[in-house]
Image 1 (cartoon, each protein chain N blue to C red):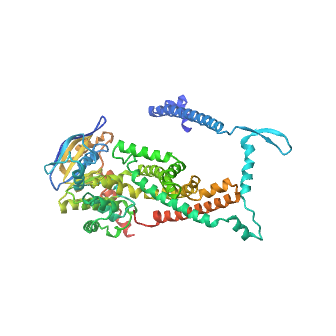
Image 2: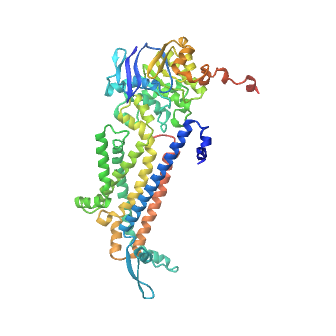
Image 3: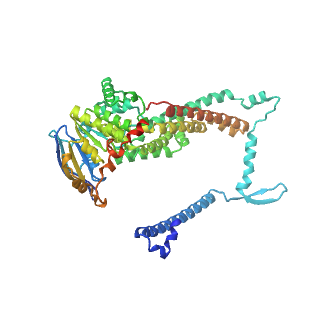
Length: 273
Length: 315
């Protein structure tokens, strides 16, 4: 159980995250939605401690992680793996080493500096790459891969960290629909098969509805909605996104990344011809 | 500007207030840009004239023309022909039918020169190695985006500044005083200066690196060293290689000069040739250094392309 109490982050006068309190049971897949600037990214980054909270506490399995320092902090970061919108891989390094970087918190100084990972780490990395169908690309430079492949490398790297929580900060925002589906499927599979808690920031409502057990909506740093996807009505959505400037209905298909949405489907006869 | 026609009163009424506001701001921005341009151009022009004046560009000198008249003219015009005169003196006398013997005569000390050329290159090589190691290690604490705190940042930056502000020749004098005449002083002198110069270039490359990769390593639990090793180093390796090869070339040039103060290399021969007014020796020595620099440039370009371009593996 990940318990977040009164978590806030203040930048100057602006409260990017404002007294967020949540309890996330183990193994839940949680989608965090909201407009740009609502504080979703800052919230996720605070959980991983990439950003230090201004106030509040994060408690995981009864252990306070807000005060961790040094080696303990690095081990915590390794145990809640982070996936970024822009992948954040070392583009000039081969895919395999990029994945083995996931073991870095458990690798000694000399080994790490010499880039000599253990055989065990290499095995883990290859297994993770196999799971994401990326073994053929293992020795290529990460920068030569497509966006979708790079994001799957990032997921493989996250997997070898052997995490208990997986954080994904808009993992599909820079991907085309087909790759977005692959990445989201991979995240769901990890959630179901390995029982990992997954927290994923999303831009697209229908993705959140399709994949998540629970949706948290943020607006101006605060939690505006917290519940099952079914409870997220159009009215609530309008409240979250403040769509008063959008006359008429809020159209989910506009932001959709789903391949099955009617507007994106190819006419059937065109395929055969 | 196409938008200026909008300023007429009749059209103005049809414009949205935002565009009208933009018009006002745009005009103000243009005006201030023009003023900045004018002031800075004037400033630089004044600086140029003052610097040239102090530098003696406007000095006059008396010369005797070919018809015997004494006239006063600008030094730079009076002195220019002498440059050709000097260069002409350094040219060797070569005849077509005795070419072989003439060239042998021109490069009469070739055995000594070759030995000293090898020494020169070795000094440059060792000094570059010294500079690269020192600069590589110091460049990370000297980068604003990587330094653990302001104290470390400032200490390393000041150190790099001090060692590169002192010219190689001065370091060479100091080290000749400490360690005596010979290449050791030259290696230390050039190596120290190269550390300072390369450290600055490396740290600037680090500051231009993409920090998302660093964040990727940090999020996986990497320490500061891990972040530097995996997040920064692979990104900056191409820059490091080109700066290093350029520095090697510069160091070859530097090590062919520091012999002037007894720190080894070809410089001592240049000094002797100058003081004994053996002008053709100078052109021979110049030719040797020139060919060496060209060779190094050609080889280093090949090496750089090989490392950066062709191999698929990162570093």
